[in-house]
Length: 569
Ligand code: NOJ
Image (cartoon, rainbow, N blue to C red; front, side, top):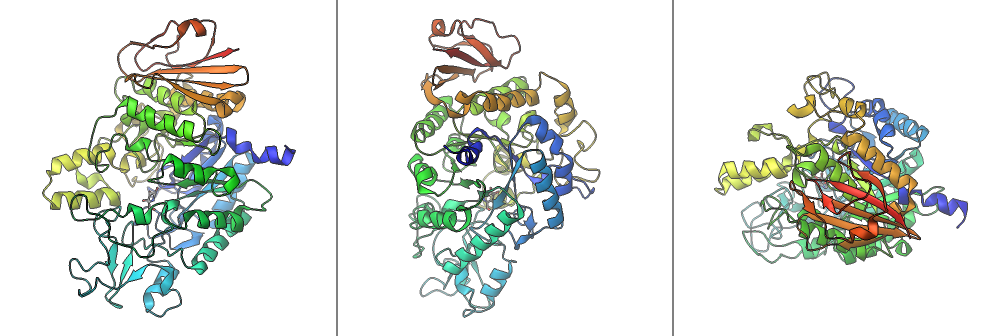
């Protein structure tokens, strides 16, 4: 391997930190986070030791879906700052040895993007075909119930079709009606997207997190889906991992990433991707993506939809994560995450955000970071931030939650039940302001925050955590340091142990003569772990989350205890 090649492999030992800019740090008192706020808080990220920041969208946007509806890919929304602020951010990050990964949202634009404004202006506009326009269902009058071109349901409730009075046609929007889907079949669309990506790389960004990227290739026939329940059909066979997806991603790699003077890091958000799909997307030889976000492990406590609350089974979680570890072991690469801006807070979902908050937060960090792949830390996870105690529907801001509430209550579901789901699964849980200190708005803003601050910020905050060597923050810092220092953490083989155990998550990692054992008790009761304890009697304790682990481990685990042991063969 040449030195240039090995430099290009830096990312395999990297840890990524996700910033949701709206909720991270507000520098100007308008209650919304911004770029200058982020620049001012880079010390926090440097202290934690992360290598890469994934920044959720900051582009110009009407903010219908908090920036995932973009009206200008090459400008910054005034709420967040200016292009000069981004340049300063990039320089400040590079100076600290950190890299910047931008969110790339190209499955759809905003309906206020000039491309769509033109496309909408007439049926013969040159950009008409940049989006998915279709006439009403045959024999039906546009705008009447059932006249939609097909029976697909939007991810944000209701139909995927919006009727355009002026032309009498409908346009497709898989997300909100203000997020029309781009037609990737049209080569001009692809060229425009690639040109925009190159422009960002020339500006100095180091990679892209690609929003719902496995939705960009659709079956152009857009056929009705099979109706399993309710009114809508299943669009997934025609929408997810579509017929030309691999062709498009390989083309993007060729047109944008290839031939650059530095490694460009890419991660695709891929709902509905199986391990087999993941392998195709991330096989380095295929030159598509470095890694993808699987959704399988964040679906283990979902029934038909994410709003149906079913208890989490540890065996199910292990089965999924273990399958991805094995599936992508030799070819491909995993990304590892418990939460992000779309998911509830990890400690509230997989841990115990009451009596064992700190300990279970450290356990979750330990288990995740000791897997093979690239760990992602979502802002506040390193503090053990929890779900928010939402009172009424009026406190929610997220379009997904508000639309779901309106639809479900409209269909006669008990509003209290709907609220219970929102409290547990709503995306606003992850979006309450970052808790910097114990002051009234948690040091996030001097104004009125756009979403309420969690009342537990008086206890759970960065200032307190950085001052306490025993905090969740310092545990995460050690985990990141361990990954940087101990090659087996990033690169070792993974073997799952005790797949049928409902309380203990256990696995080994091995590289050359070094072996690690990771054991974690996902319960509030003491347990015994059924592993070969004698074989680990002389092992060194690399990390534990209770602060007083015995020198020679006897196989017992305290409530929510997680241990990492190391031995050489
Ligand atoms: C996935 C993003 O993570 C989510 O926040 C957004 O609502 C949808 N894609 C649509 O862009």
